[in-house]
Length: 156
Image 1 (cartoon, helix red, strand yellow):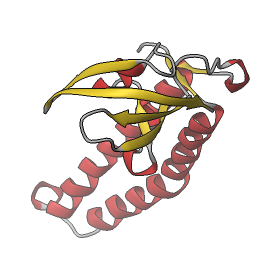
Image 2 (cartoon, one colour):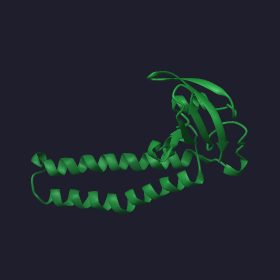
Image 3 (cartoon, rainbow, N blue to C red):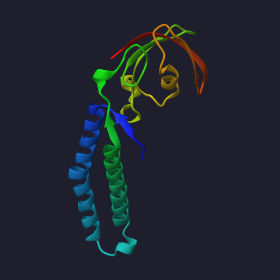
Image 4 (cartoon, one colour):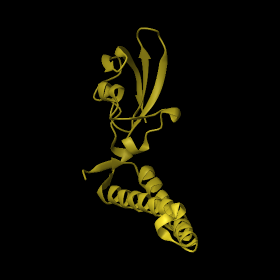
């Protein structure tokens, strides 16, 4: 697995999710398996099969979270330069075509939440904005075509 860059907040969310899965979900699934096992013949027990599949998925998710945490590198937010667009900066852009403005907080893929204005740096728009400065006009290729944005502000 490659190095994963994230904020301390992002790492904390991973830790909380892992703790919930291990302390709440794992015991629940184990109980479900035990209850299904008590119902008799396991070869024709759909509840048992479903509980075992859920256990497999849960253990896979736990392993994935542990691997992400092991590879995580925390980004020091105090060292972020706001002279150009980069990860963890907030950027206010204007769609040149329609004049609409939008502010995005560029974050790691694991922290993305478009409804909250958190845009993953792996998206086409974020990739097009990275490294640009206030006043720059950039053309970004998105699935719907080419969009042109002017960078109005960069901050934290």
